[in-house]
Image (cartoon, rainbow, N blue to C red; front, side):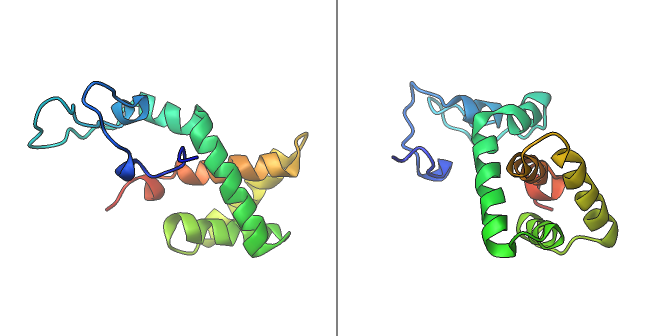
Length: 131
């Protein structure tokens, strides 16, 4: 029942390491750690694009967009950008996002295209990194 809890609240055992945490540079729990390693490597991006967890979260995000913005694609795109980045999309981002969603709709269920669009939002540098 607690598989969707934030990583901050997970009980940590020294002899068990979560694979996700290893991918994203979690410190070794058996020894003290004065400073965390910081890296951006290919396995992190691959995990974010292909693992089941971000796909499930993207589906939840797409459902939220449908609830909050309705059926209008332009409203959904605007809401997605605001929720993911904390700012409105530029005119070019909005136009390109609408074109992307329309292109994804060809041959797929509409829900699947919105899920893919939301997964794309999760992989934006603005979403992943704090400046």
